[in-house]
Length: 381
Image (cartoon, rainbow, N blue to C red; front, top):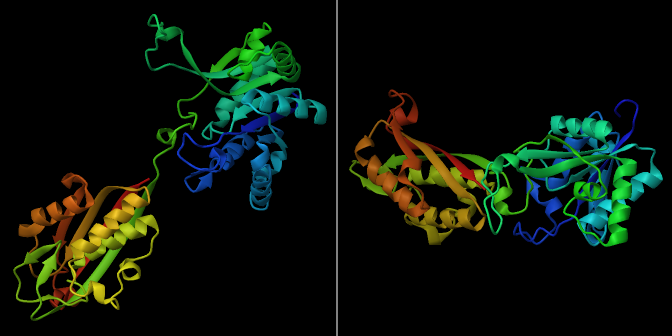
């Protein structure tokens, strides 16, 4: 509520998600593990000006949308502002008009804020400034200055006169209702609600939007998510076994005992990558009870994990690892180890770090009973 005037918010929750590359509607695409629609609802609900929220959904997703919001109400009081999920129309404009008519007929709201579900990063400051302007002028639109030079077919346009239009867009209820009525009567199709209001002579007040309030249309618009995994492995040093570290045969009088080649560094890296993807550990995928992996080069196992990274849509950003042992000295072999990892994981060698350290003769590594390794892996999706 603002100056004793009730404010309703309409969230337009349509869209097929095809340009995002998904086979389900975009409002359910997860960002940081949470459906897009939830980010949008929560950000709008945080505005003290907004009293009620009405979600406009396509008919085939109406029930799923209702169930999602009702479930959220059990755990998050912000969702209590959502009063109804209603059916939209064949287009954005018709869906918006359905929302406006519902608010007009079922509430006593004097201000309506209309927002696209595909703008999940709007701020309370942006929302409130827009509502305040609508109270003053009857109509307000969130905009940002264009950073790019823009031209039409014939000429370059003056960049300092151009704005990129966003939502929220806020209106006095009578203004937006009349704008939609006139557009429907004349068969006019606008790109947004403000364009309808301008058509009937209403001049909107421009309020400050935000570059972070971008519209999610393609995968490039989605924020990069990062996942961190930590791997740790230990193998015993024994006689009559080769000492393999990072895929490199190390000159040492003792080697590492294991079902495979017991490459403790590669095993730690594998566990770190699997951990970042949430896909268990090395023993789950390559158990020591499976004869297929007896004596196998751990680089081959790493190659399989590299394929899993691609199949699950991740990219390896960097790997930081450490080999812990009293002997052998690993520094002379680090460059070759990094080359092996770089080639198999298909990442720049500068993104891989391998260190060596001792425990100052303390513990099992200090007694030369075994070698340990740790790896921290950063992935993006």
